Length: 454
Ligand code: UD1
Ligand code: CA
Image 1 (tube, rainbow, N blue to C red):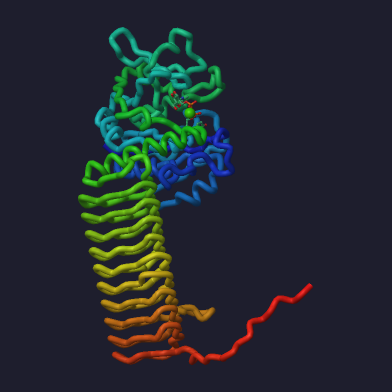
Image 2: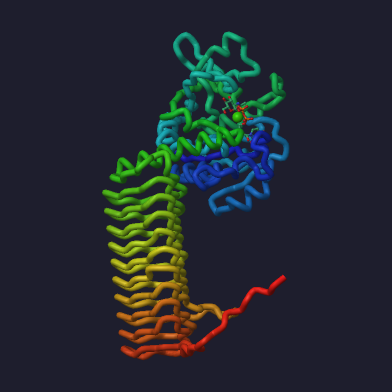
């Protein structure tokens, strides 16, 4: 059966106390609405309609994609009114309603809900709550069949004792749903057009209301303020940490890891505390990551090590290589197998060949460094002339003395050596020694300056 998905994202979210719309606030580095969209896409629907209102332009700008239709709801007159705005765009047999501020809903749960959907059936996701305050309550008859939903503010004190809450997520046959929406009234405690009123209409029309429940309450939890946002973040991170451990990763403390993207892992990986993994991170077998590292869009090959306080973005660590503590690898930094990068070394758009070393205090940018090279402490590639960037190219077995300036474009042949403190602005041929520094002279009997007397 074909499926349209409608995502409600028009609300203001006053309690966020924010200048950006609620649905753009991030969980695990991705906007709440972004999570819902990604999950919706996994269901391969025929269309996705996003109902926007508050901050509409910003939402549209941030999430624009070919497979989305944005529908304006100029006034927020209730959830039923919100869904009704999408009616002209709906064509499929079934319509699923999701919420832009309920980010952790899982694909499996929605698949189960969809399995219930049929021409003469409405699928409703409900949740058992220890404290149902604020939720619409599910009213069932003596046979346990759902009859209606009553909102908290319209509920009698007896109805408020019901602990089965409405998540708001449902799947309904489109033609029927559109008929019901057209008949909604706002004659209720909040003066709103309630989507929830369609349940009683479905029952009156002889449809069966089938319910499913999520695997956890957090899955259907909305974030109305930053406290709830943080709760969802922690739940997400707890799940992410568990998933990694199940795949063979040792986490020194599962509560001190943050995953903000997609992580692919091998086995026998060790991750110390306060590590942040962002974007697409690939970690192969036997990798060790020390404490306080940020690793974004990077690949760590088998047996490589990232030592404490290192920051990697767009980097690749070869097999058995290591970096840090305090290494900074920027986009295009590639370490060959067994390469070594030590403390306070910054690498950008540069490749260090197999077994090459840059142990201390260097900047290597726009450089090709061969195998088994040694880069002395304090070496800088002068890659930028104020207008353009230039390459520094080193062959294999090159030894750069300490505190060199390699003024690009420049190249050094295999086995070349440079003297400490050199400024190298011309080619050093293979096996030659390049020295580019002022000759030392000594002035004997030198008198040091004296302090002025007051
Ligand atoms: C709604 C349900 C309630 C359910 C609860 C779960 C209704 C009438 N009630 O109540 O049964 O237990 O969610 O959290 O549906 N929105 C719009 N446009 C509007 C109104 C709302 O886009 O005109 C969006 C909001 O931004 C929000 C979502 O719909 O993301 C839910 O709206 P909200 O007003 O928070 O509904 P609740 O009162 O929580
Ligand atoms: Ca709500």
